[in-house]
Image 1 (cartoon, one colour):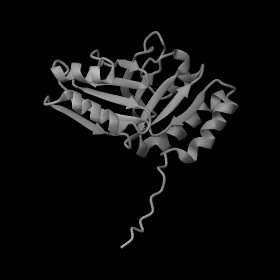
Image 2 (spheres, one colour):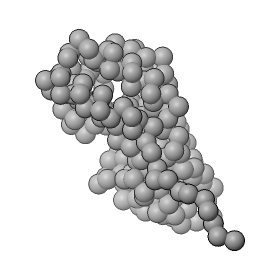
Image 3 (spheres, one colour):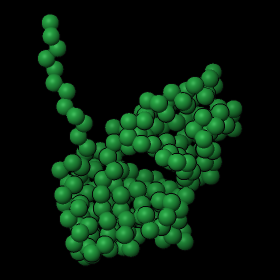
Length: 200
């Protein structure tokens, strides 16, 4: 029997909000820039930070896993976020999750490691522009000024009462990534657009 199932191309959680995000960016005169970065590969990695697997995985990814709380390590298109003493989030280009998981598992060998593809769990919002700090400050208790939360920093926190991971980009002018669960992405986008009205 022929397979009659139709497969639709993937649709990002914020596909319908793309126009509103672009409009807010235009009308703010560059004060804020809002956009979705859909489909980034995201792998949750758990392993013993002091074991041999940590070093082997780092070599396989051509970077060192961050060991300091709330820090970020970048190498090429890969970004690794420290989430806990034995937990990291590896973020890579769209579609790379399978290859990255294979590299991690091969490098770890017989060492205990947990690798979970969580790419579909979250989407990523880019919040940039000269007023990005001010915009996020409307709903985030963290001090996101570059003096306190500059390049190489990340944090699990709440923004507009939504659990997120905030990542300071490599250059303060590049703004922030805000990783949010897909089911809350629409709500958080509405909140950001509302909070951005004073800059529009």
